[in-house]
Length: 83
Image (cartoon, rainbow, N blue to C red; front, side):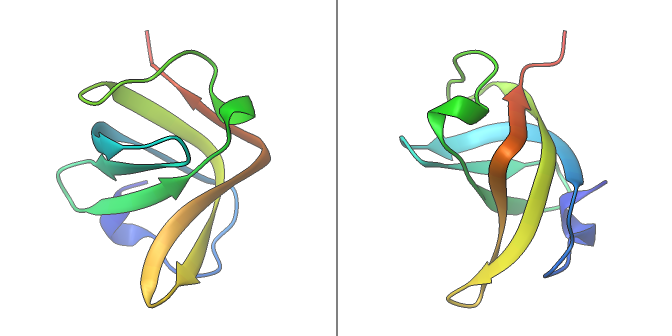
């Protein structure tokens, strides 16, 4: 799924893109069609991720936070680097 296609309330969202910015609980992902925030916890990381990495986001939920669409990862969500 492309980032430009996500809509509030969607569940089990899987997207891929490049990490263009990040901190300890949120990253900004861009796939060329758009960008979005991804809220995560360390348990969601399959491996360490850095700015510039191309990553895969599995099992996210799209939420609206202060008018901005974000992908929130639950316990079952996963961020990994495709190999």
